[in-house]
Image (cartoon, rainbow, N blue to C red; front, side, top):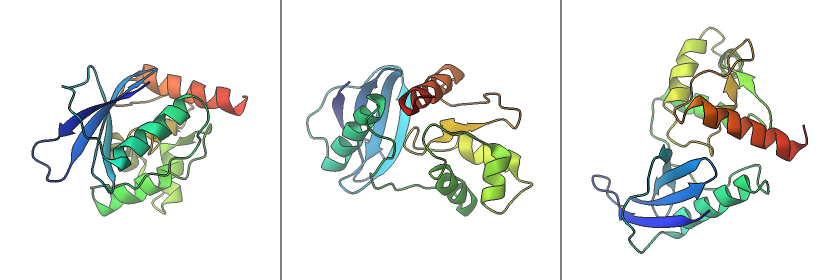
Length: 168
């Protein structure tokens, strides 16, 4: 697993991106010297360019530790852009413990909006920071896996990985 610097991301002043090779494919990590803005799955890394910020390097290091089973919680600063509702959902996602799952309705109740399970699903779908904001831990009320931007196979892999690390 390694980070491949990709230089400045066009259209976002001060933002750069690196590509991280994980066991479930490449992750494109966008951010700056101060924060991480996005972690997204991608098929292939972009062109190699020198100069990843310390924040981007830290995110790569923590992702590497996560995939090695040595990290359960991420400690990189995030700049999350979204509606107030989305930000509440994303904050609640970060409270779901490593190796555990919660339903969309459970998140809705946790943020004081018990009848907004569908809206929680929409906010979950728009989570810009995969894995670090663990939307993969959210499942249907019946215990089944439901949508995941990186594909259900990746969601299953992440959940299995966390259960294995926890010894379940």
